[in-house]
Length: 188
Image (tube, rainbow, N blue to C red; front, side, top):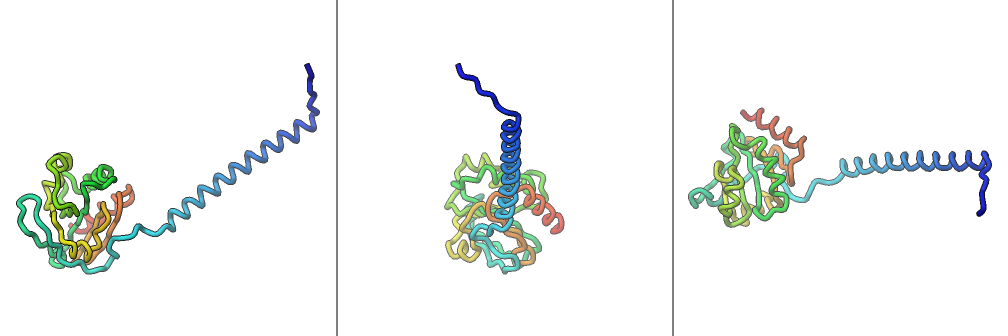
């Protein structure tokens, strides 16, 4: 059996090399995290949604509760919240949790829900009571969907004095939920 003897100078150089590589790895990790944050911050918002300040046209659809035609005219309202959803949306459960926080039971703000589906299943209504407790419009015309740019779901739109104040496309994060609550408090 052969034995190897490592000289102290070699061990010192090897240790210094390991320490240098570890510090380099640590520095590159910090750099990558900072770059990722910068990319996320500068990323464009998802395609779709209405720009703030855009006048909102009349929303025409059928009430889920009684199958009657409804017209919601945002220009005559001080404050209006539209929650746009699809039963088939992959993010629906996460987003309903976000919507229940500011609009659920006990909330003073009653949103108008808009589904891009022709109807809503009974099971979905049972699972999400907000669908039956608020005005929910189905069978919204393609012209209305196009005019309001409601093609993506979920979408949360706050309208004040007939113009878009905020429009969030996608699942609301905790900062956006806080912003929704602050905006709603100012509307009261």
